[in-house]
Figure: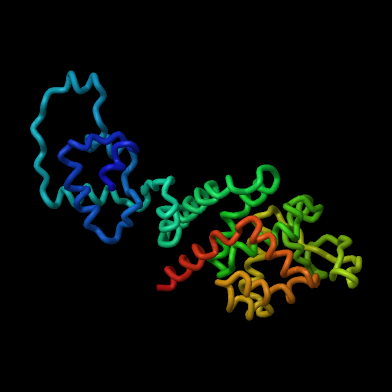
Length: 287
C-alpha cells in the first residue's frame, strides 16, 4: 500500500533500486503506523535520486550501474526518511490524521492533524456565521479537551449558547465567550445580564471577565472546569458528555433549561464527533 501511494504524491521512480530496501524496512517496522507515510522533504528525495526523470532526461541520461546497498546504508537512509520532524500525512485519510493526533508527542504534528480534521468536518455545518464560529474554535476545543480532560462537544456547545455564536456584546467587545464572571478586584466589566429561567428569570448587574481574544477565553474556561473542585463530580464523567452536562450544569448556570439547551446544540451540529478522539489521546498518553 505504501509503495503505491509514493508515486502520485512525490512522483517517485519506483524502479530506482534504492526504493525497495527502504520500503521493506519501513513496512517491517511496527513503530510506524501503516497509514501514515513518513518521508523526507523533496530535497532529500532529489538527493537520493528518487524523483522520476522527465521525458527529456530519459532520452539523454546514459545508463549507470545500479548501486549495491549495504545493510548500514539502508538503515541510514531509512532514518533520514522517517525523521519524525518531517512526516508527511495523507490528509485524505481521516484515520491517519486521528492516529497522528492520538499518538504524536509533537504538539505541532498533533495540532496540524486536528486542523485538517476540523477542515474536513466544517463542510457539514451550515454555511455562514455558524460554520465560521465552530471552525474557529474546534481545534482549540479538541486540544484543550485533551489537556484538561473535558469533552470538546460541551466546550463548543457552551460557547455557542453563552455567546450567541460569538455575536453577543460580551463576546465581540470583551472576548468573553462563556459568560465567565470576575471578582471585584479583577479587571472586569459590569454589564446587565439575566439570571435564572422561565418564571424566575430576572435582570441584574454582574461583573464579567475580559480577555485578549477568544483563544484566551476558551483556555481559561477549560482550565476552570478542569481544575475547580466544584466540577469534580462532573469531571469523573467527562468521557460521557451527557453525564458531564448533567453534573456540570447546576453548578455552572442558573437556567433550569441549560442541560436541554446544550444537549440540543451538541446533537444538532454533531459536536461529539471528536469526544472519543480526545479520550483516546488521553488514554494513550497515560500508558
